[in-house]
Amino acid sequence: MTETAVATVNGAQTPEWTSSERRRLWRTFSRNRASLLGLVLVVLVVLASVAAPLLTSWDPYEQNPVDRLKPPNGSHLLGYDAYGRDVLARVLYAGRVSLVVGVASVLLGGIVGVVLGLVAGYFGGRLENLIMRFVDVLMAFPSLLLGLTVVAVLGPGFQNTILAIGIVLSPAFARVVHACALKLKSQQFVEAAQCVGAGHWRIMSVHILPNALGEVVVLASLWVASAIRIEASLSFIGLGVSPPTPTWGNMIRDGTQQLMNAPWLSVFPGIAILIAVLGFNLLGDGLRDVLDPRLRG
Amino acid sequence: MLRYVLRRLLYSIPVFLGVVTIVFFVVRVIPGDPATAALGDYASKEAVDALRERMGLNAPLWLQYFRFLSDLLRGDLGTSLITGRPVAEQVQQALPFSLELTVVSILVGIVLGIPTGVYTATHRNQFPDYLGRVLSLAGLSVPAFYFGILLMLLFAIQLKWLPAIGGGDLGDPGENLRYLVLPSLTLGLVMTASVARLTRSAMLDVLSQDYMRTARAKGLRERLVLFRHGLRSALIPVVSLTGIWAVSLIGDSVTTEIVFARPGLGKMMVGAILQRDYTALQSIMVVYTGFVVIINLMADLVYGLVDPRIGR
Image (cartoon, each protein chain N blue to C red):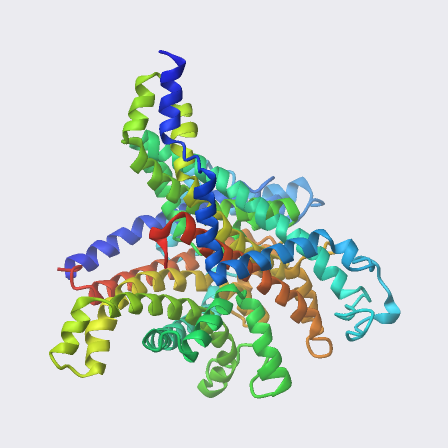
């Protein structure tokens, strides 16, 4: 079999967007004000967390017992916490942790889910049945409860939180990719690839996966929002990322002890969660409209 | 219809068994084992061995699984590793608090969400629609526990209208209700956001259908057109997703119970995790699985009632 034949088969199915198509997609995206707002919010949150040392000169870990629980003022815009630490600095640095947990757990869940979904959809048979029933059972369960159970087994901490949320998110990816793989495997370009002798892994990774990628990207951006929320909930319960590392969830948890006399301790990190989650939700909706107009809600 | 009900009932059995099985094995992959975990790293080997024997951990895995299932069928949830009391007893005390919270919250979500969705759809691109859309977006993005804290700050701490924490006395309906208002509004309003958003878009789809114009053309009153012809079809996707939201509400009920210090299952579960009480954890998960299965079943049944194509 010749190289050219393989190349043609590949070229026929891989969605390579020309620059005019890319411009059209951007136009569709940017015409929607909500999606643009989402993009702006996400960029803002990412910039604020990455550039935290530039935006504030205070150390998020430095304790000043004299200043404990002092309300917001000119030099400390969001006030001090119960250990006299600057709340603004902690909110900004917490963004790094929450974003890394959100993105890393979606990556982990995405990779695991995509592999499971591809294998199930492509090979079919008993393996498919086994994987998809497992996915059904996991999806029947509330994600937070599932996350709590995993954390109960692994113990709290930064890496375990990512692992737990990743496990929770993987079934959703598996289900979407499974449906795509089922649809695609009977298409002619896959048959053609089989004819020229492409192996199972090559067909799955080069021919099927790229066509399912649009839906995976949409799902991923929406799930980053959920991952941030689940992380916040776990840390709020005290089973996520442990102090003194600040995350929005554990800052709110610490703040609830002082709700009567220092409500800002809980209120500001919550606003940060709201902005981040809203941004990823709007961005995800916008991407969905562009990449997969059939799913528009 | 009866066959449909039976089929859904049968379908929920493997889901229940599946989750229970996963929970059973997850608890047993804990590094070390539940006995060591419960007693801590400094326990003597004899103490751990004795506890292992008492927990039945020395038996082969299949036998443990079989015992677990047969105990479960008899309603025996095991003994707490920490208190030494039957877990079923503790669950019985906590269950009413979680049950009333879940039921009332779901009702709030449906009762507020569907009319809001219909209203905003029929007033598309007017002020109430914009307001509804902004609020439902905020509702979709706010974590339930944070919303609960905000409600508590406003209504319990600032205005002092309602109690901030506790579950109230179950024997006194008035007091019980006062303690239930804030937690159930927390979960209910978060769910309202999702229900209203979907009802709105489903209604908008339906409003542009030809049969709606036909219904109006034959002179039906607008209310009749909207509710009998419009809402009836719009409800089909709403019902199927409301089941899913109600299930995820159970997850949020855990954090809400912690915010308001309600002595329910969620608080019990977190306590069990922190104290490494794995028999209690396992049993609470079984009870929650029961919740999930019942909610799914009810959603299926309502679905059968709303969609005349199903259940024939």
